[in-house]
Amino acid sequence: MPRTCENENCSNPLKGRVDRKFCSVYCKTDYHYQKRKESGKEYFKKTVDDQLRLNRRILRDYNLAGKTTVRKTELLNKEFNPRFITHWWKNQEGDTYLFCYDQGFKEVKDNDKQKYLLIQWQDYMNRQVF
Ligand SMILES: [Zn+2]
Image (cartoon, rainbow, N blue to C red; front, side, top):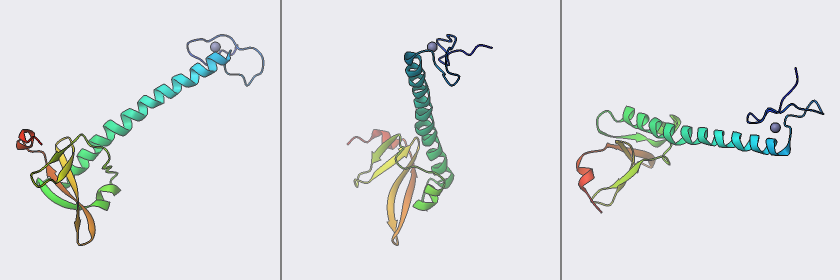
């Protein structure tokens, strides 16, 4: 069976060395460009969307009561990533809470331990403008 160019948009028959994968330099460059584009989409989908959802799920699981504190390391061990947030909210005291959808968190120190104070989004937060 004759081997063909591995660029799906081409499929020209290959001649020459057996380890050749592409009929031309163009096909080789184009192939790798397409692959990078595809994996780039994959990366974006996985890290942003999935991480936000995972963050929200972790926060909700720890915050069934609506307000609580939890060890920072405990959340990080569950692959919580505080760099991925949907928005933030500042209360009247100037404390900023970071949110993943309806679940919010803020870093606090308690007996020299790093903790997160967890809260849930409330309707009145929409009405405050700073
Ligand atoms: Zn080709």
